[in-house]
Length: 434
Ligand SMILES: Cc1cc2nc3c(=O)[nH]c(=O)nc-3n(C[C@H](O)[C@H](O)[C@H](O)COP(=O)(O)OP(=O)(O)OC[C@H]3O[C@@H](n4cnc5c(N)ncnc54)[C@H](O)[C@@H]3O)c2cc1C
Image (cartoon, rainbow, N blue to C red):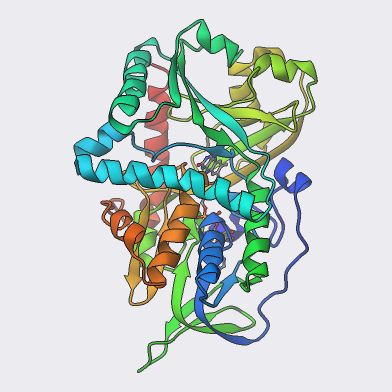
């Protein structure tokens, strides 16, 4: 099943609140044969950040996007600009040693800064709001989280994450079932499609070519030459280097990435405007992610709507009715929203890796790829795009660190992936109940 076409209207954004509140003019498709230095496949955060960084270093590039700029996970996610990787620093220290854990921490801090600095530099309004609350649905999770806040302060000099007790958390989240948590004021939340549109405009103003409705079908290496040809149904791009930035939609374009990444779906709703109730539920206008494995994540958007992500399904196809699935999770946290209308409901596909650490590498000579941010791509995907661009421009500082992260293939063949996913997710969602 080709995920690029399994769940959405070809060439059209998901029916999201984001698509209703941000747009750019449609870009042309590839209808000819072009030649460039770097061809990037995919116009999400990874591909767009790579394009912007390549252009700022004087390297020519063409971006080919199967649908629209920001059509994939980047334009329809929860918007949480989180700190770190999907593995906490203590686990990273145990797995990779102190020095590597510190290098990764520095890169993840640089990732958040990259977004804030570039949106300022290029005048991109992304509706940034500071603060993510980590709300714990089990009492036993509190002590380790509070210790983690101290660990970050003591060993990384990070002062922005503070513990919240049972009483404190109510000043941040007026939802039910939380025993406390922590608030990270160095993290925040954004309008992700506005970021995609802004990055695309900035990259084009700096000389990048971005083409929409241009699905890449094949990438050939020219016999006896260093050049590669990237082929769509209506044209091709001859180039020296290729970047595969297709994340959850990796499909068959690259076998090595395909084996290492598992696409999974996740779902979001946005309520009708709630007036003062929205502020009562989330008084500080922070984003929230809770401690369930099938995580509930939510925040206010447009001042008084609630965007709520959660729910689960165990197939590559989105369920026919997304709203009731997510609504159930939302009412578990905010029972007072029982009569609230849902105005938008959509699904999206992201990629996880086996150990939840992203992948970056040269997958064959002069062909690069990055992805598998495992739910942390809002901050990380851009810095991974920059790492690829810098590496191609001759500065491998980021690439050399990030490409050392261990990544192994998922067991079984690509065909057994949906069954494996169903088994794993059923197990984990069962654990959430205990
Ligand atoms: C519902 C949801 C909620 C999420 N919430 C968060 C969150 O709150 N915080 C967080 O950090 N992360 C979150 N994520 C994850 C985050 O969105 C991703 O990690 C990140 O956007 C990945 O960016 P990307 O550019 O690598 O991939 P994508 O944005 O998926 O972009 C890949 C692009 O490649 C294109 N493409 C694929 N194949 C081809 C082809 N053959 N030819 C041409 N183009 C092709 C696709 O059309 C797509 O536009 C969420 C994801 C989802 C789905």
